[in-house]
Image 1: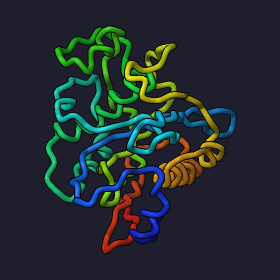
Image 2 (image 1 turned 180 degrees about the vertical axis):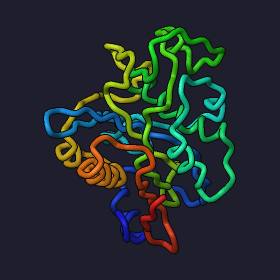
Image 3 (image 1 turned 30 degrees about the horizontal axis):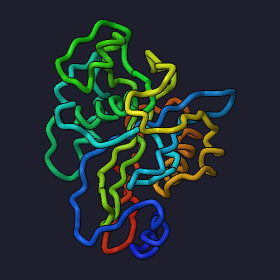
Amino acid sequence: MEGMTRAEIDRDESRDFAFVGKQLRPRDAATLILLDRVGSGFHVLMGRRHKRHAFMPGKFVFPGGRTDPDDGRIPVMQPLHPDEAAKLASRGKKISDRRVRAIALSALRETYEEAGLLIGHSQPFQTDMADWQGFAEHRVHPSLETLRLVARAITPPRRVRRFDTWFFAAWRSDVAVALPDGGPTEELEELVWLPIDKARKMDIPRVTQTVLADIEKRLEHDPLLRPGGDVPFYHMVRNRIVRDIL
C-alpha cells in the first residue's frame, strides 16, 4: 500500500468502493483486531461483510465502524494505557480526553454489534445509552486497559465514505461474553478465526492486508503487544500513499 499513487489505489479498489466526485471529510472510526495464541502462532478474527454494502461489499474485515461521539460518555472499568492514549492524542490536532475515549470505546461497541463479543469485566453495568444496553444486559462493564493501537489509516479521497480509522488489537481472552448467535446488527455474514498468514490470502481490502502484515511483523518481536509500540499511519500526501510512524 505504501507508495501507491492515487490512480493506482483507485484502480485497485474500484470494485470495493462506490466513488463520488466531491471531497468528503473523513469521520472518526475504530476497528478491533482480536488475536488468539494457538501453539506457536496467532489466529485473527475476520468477518465477511454483506454484498449489499456500498463500502467493501463481500470483503472479509475486522469488526469496526464509525465512532459515535456519545461513546465517550460511557464509564469504563479501566482506561486506555497512557502510552496508547498519547498516540491517539498526537494525531496532529487538539483532541479531548473524551474523544480519545470515544474512539477506543467505539471499537468495543462495534465488536459487540457485529460479532456478538463483549470485552470488559463481568460486573454489573448500567447506562441510559441505547447502543450500550447489550453490555448492561449481559453484565459486562467495558474496559480499555488491554487495547493496543496497531495502525491508523485514512480512506483515500473520492470514496462514498471516508474514515480516519484507528486499528486496535486485543486478545480473545479479553472477551467476557461471546453471544452464540453473533451480534445484533448481523452486519457480518460469517465469522472465522484464521491463522494470520491464511487471513492475508482471503478476499480482503488492501488496507486490511497491509495492517495484517504490520501486526504479523510486530508480533514476531513483541508477542505480548506491549504498550507504546510503533503505530503505522497510512494516508495520502500529494497523491501518493505514505507510511508514517506515530
